Length: 265
Image 1 (cartoon, rainbow, N blue to C red):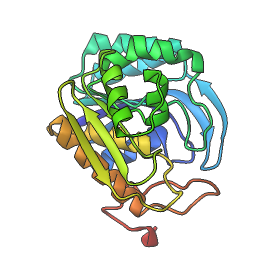
Image 2: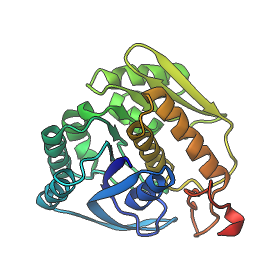
Image 3: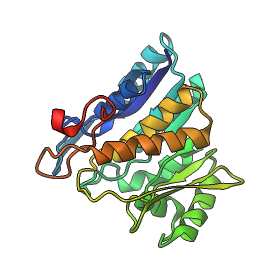
Image 4: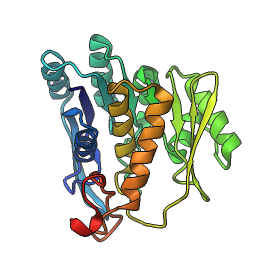
């Protein structure tokens, strides 16, 4: 069995963060492990509070995993402060896992900030260059690339700018756009487009966390980057199609849609 580590914040309501990552990994048949960097009191409607774990505890958790069950891939999600980012980057440079998928989480689905705005510089300096695949959505890509994105050409230009910062592949997700859900992948030489019909639902809580975890799982399973992204997007699309209408806000997608439908929950 392949092993995949998620380094991210928690979501006590179970739809995003560490909880979504572990569900996604289980659904892909890999052994999921976790390093919690922040405890987030959130639900489908709002974020109540965030309490960060100390950099030492982050590093100790990473040591505990890497010295015993070395991961075949790592997914990195919410990193709220520069200190947290530096701690994670130090250990990733020390252990050098083959695949690192980084989701630069800046906001929750309901718009609540999950990253200190002053930490973007630390993200681009310390964390972004470690990415095998970086998976920003459009608002995150705009922030990192320092430009506005209105169309596919803008997505491609933003991907070029972000790629130049050191990551190996950039996947800009088009879920915040209009029309079909179009994602653009850039590997430094070629662009790839992944397009699906947009599903009319508000229940998309945790889609970014889930996609990055699915890509990491597929990389661990031996798929090439383009195929890992395609399979990850297909998985998320079906999860949204069978999403769960629970909670008072944006409900979660169904991580186990291949095993049971919404009606059987």
